[in-house]
Image (cartoon, rainbow, N blue to C red):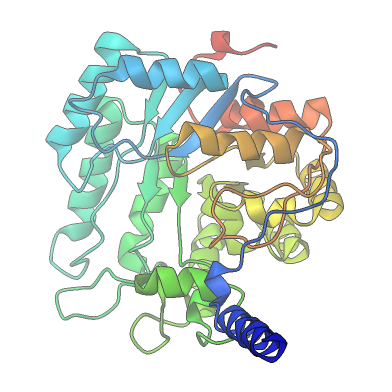
Length: 364
């Protein structure tokens, strides 16, 4: 009887060990046993402007619920970068009407341009004319989607380069009109790397396979980034907001060099707070040095996700989770930014760069 019990116990142990060994990497997510001080930050210490948001339904949505959620976060102004939705001027017109009739000082709307078929006769003149009309209507900036430089094609099926000279008048016109260009170029560099055990974005690419990019079908990552930098270099009178820290949040030293080279380039932290939260001392030093050039952005609208941004920026908490494990399997640490740096990041820099924000909503 004892022999049977021993055998069964051995089998149970072997089976249990076998099951553990077969567990997939994405299933391994144990709760931390580390106990450290800290708290959830549900509201920003200072009123802030979110310079990177998308509200595609703005023409027909009830803005009151959105504004209530903004108030809970201490967000005074949201910049809706998707003014034209997927391309319609009527979409922009109705969105602006909804804002102006209900909450005229709580939203800033950017317009968008379709960069396909730039080789068709009249494209440049039409794009410049559309930009002028949209600004006259009430748009306060131009948002360039990431399809530009990766997926937009001319009439012959060729990739449209970001620094295509036929588009140069658009950047110049933005400078002339006094509106910034918030431009998203490429995506995180690991999306171009082999999808193997050396790729830090392995889990994200497994769960979101459509994000994988190839040099042959898109363009090399560095090529796209260099083209973006070329327009910063050539159009010095235009202010560019380089989205997502220009995908250099994991290399702040290089981003600093770019800041030094391009005084007309600003940036924002949308969707890259996890990069800052894993290097708190270096990130704090960087944001302090370039405190006049970085703005607050989030990118997607989920009020509870802002809590992590506030905690990273304001607290000195240690080892707390990010809200999307496939973005960051590592833990976050608070930067504990000084008050003046926080104010610049939260609202002062945006007030300098983006026109027509109601300054009365913010302290001096």
